[in-house]
Image (cartoon, rainbow, N blue to C red; front, side):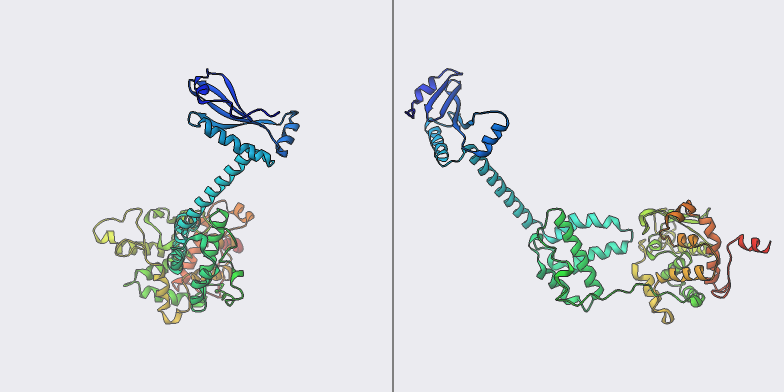
Length: 446
């Protein structure tokens, strides 16, 4: 015969001594913890198979469980009976009320997380993700300021229409809308923009800010847009036999152009444009006649030392004479730029290139190509060791060569660079004469 329900009264509960347990029937229990204070619980035999199996694995035969229903008087007698009745209803349907509560709590938590994620995705725009998450992760890997500016321009200018859109809602059509107008008119810009945006979405996918296929991957457009035009793989160089003419033409412009002074410095040092643009006076050691470029400004992320030749010393003197600090009657401070404009800032990235392009005989050549001119001369017209040539160009050497070099060996490179300076000045033939490293001639004649 089943035990009757609703045995207790409110007066009995209020008068119950602490530690006393009372049953209201049907599994509903009350345990007093103080005067008119206590806790409700519901005892039952679980029908849940997983729980029973877990108990059996622990060597326990009982499947009985106790479910908390709240504290009295916050949960009244009537409310406790309602909760117990709901639990008995679940049991009648073969459902464990504790497991049902856990499932409901899990679902509620998941809904809350989904709502939070959705709100975050609505707030996380393309522009915000680019500025706060992606670019701070990517840009520190670049040493060339021009590359940094180009990447920033992609997300601030070329992809401007995407900046205020929720990142999670951007799809293929959004990317296509910014690529299509410039795909054939500005193929290099368009192709690089797509690649950079693809990298942003790859970053967002891996960090949980975007779900689904990458909307900027090339396979999204390969049947819609023509294949991207391949960019030139080399920088047009000044022909070796025209190097003296080129340098003479550049020198003729130096009276009115600081960029011309910098272009000759780049030619003599066989350095990259960015390395010269951002050179500072504290990198110049006049006593040792060396220019020490820190790793942070080098493409290969390692310190590089360039021997300063006699003509480079003259260029430094002229750059200092024209420096804004000198014109104010002060000495340039160590951290100021060597080739500084009238505001003390480095010359623009295009200053050197546009100077060369305005020279009709060399308008198809590039400043970066001057490194190729030097390498052609050093490799084909001299017998200086290959590792010295590559070290002067700050190229990555092989493991064996790196071990052999044991440092920058700038003093071993100095004769090579003085010989190159002589070629540039027209004081030595650019082609047709073999130049030996110092020491090699004496050995040959001995």
